[in-house]
Length: 271
Image 1: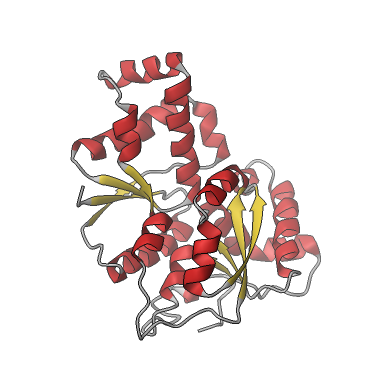
Image 2: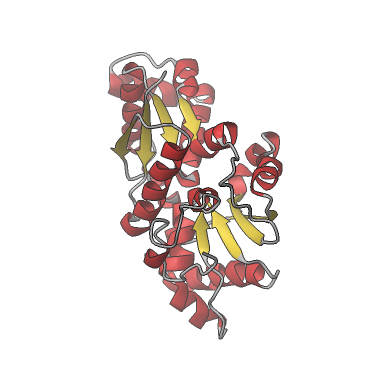
């Protein structure tokens, strides 16, 4: 498969556009230009309540991409969790598989489907090359907020070790749940839980916080003032960065404008 389709989770439009634009720029830097965009609102934890109807919509998109002999690129961790759960349910729950097979009106080749999907940060780690224009993160310390459900996956592929080695960045991992799903049903609780997590990371003396989760960016950055107010804190200076922004920052032609730092509510000031 030489062609790729980026699965663009547009559930939070502003946050997802910041991720998508930086991701497209990063892939170009890594000589991956043949990419189409497939928009799909994969939502948050509440989306799973729809069960078969929700998973059918996701599966139909994935199978369509696979039939075109293209590879699906997952760019955010919320989408990755959805797809991991979908594949697991197809393997382990026969009734669930039969129900989706009935909806699709065709058999599901789980192995082929699984092989056609890739998490973009893995590709970046495989293809990223340092050159004379490389600008390292040496001397910086970052918190990396990672979905608790992905802890074993991250450790299995030694993702953090590879990331630190390439970027020359000190990374403090925080395995947490994302509370963005509470924003509409219980915003007071969402801000309370998010403020605890945000300032726990801030108080470790980090320069910035990394995330691959659109929901985390949404609640920590887009709702940053409410998080600050809930915590009763005066400080609100440590920014959130998507992983592609962290990688792109190592290129000397990157700046605050093309990294879309000006679109952040907590603007990064390191460039």
